[in-house]
Image 1 (cartoon, rainbow, N blue to C red):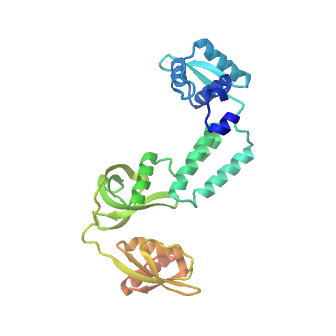
Image 2 (image 1 turned 30 degrees about the horizontal axis):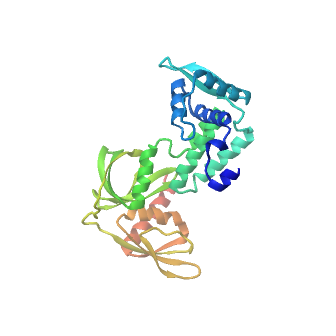
Image 3 (image 1 turned 90 degrees about the vertical axis):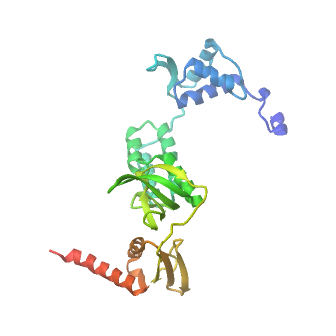
Length: 312
């Protein structure tokens, strides 16, 4: 202990190597079955061990794990090579059915109120927990609740980085109307809406801000070094009142007036459809001021929606 306090380093003299090697072996076998050769390579390349072990020495470490309560078996894989595997150990999580159901309820609640990076981290955490829980029902239920089960996680993580950098990217997108095609966009953000994950950005084809289902993005073909804006983008300026002063604004919105009970917002957007969807979500807490053409279209939309409930 004095040596460790003084040097802050783990050295050969500070370890019980039989116990340490048994722990190294446990950690490796807990992850996946290993052959004798693979175990030898692990021990030989370990920064503290760097030694070759005989089959008899390996048995000593396996017996140490068995005395701790581990079940260690040797099985043959499809390649006919024998491998050691831990089928049971005393360090598995202890839980009750009620605790598992509570965990699933928490998970279900969190995925609805979380940003995309936190969602990825949360789902990876539950996957790790599932690896320690021998309960297929729990694992299957957690998978059903997952919002990224049908998404290539490596693509999702790359898209998150592209949005952070506001990259200009080309993606292969499986459009429900026209099939797979290349789309060039300026990536803006990734958000969760109605239990689906969307990529937002300015598209070069239609020259407007748009959204794309991430599970339809097959790959990122290119991340361009130099960025540019699509030419000919037409933007509409819309002014409206919100009677919820603490509303979270989008990047294209800015407050031009504020009182105790409302804020007046000016939005500049190339996609009025998305803006209408956003304003509809506010219900009676929103009142459009200008322009008249946008206000008239919005009123007509509300009338059509009302008529739909009374038809027939």
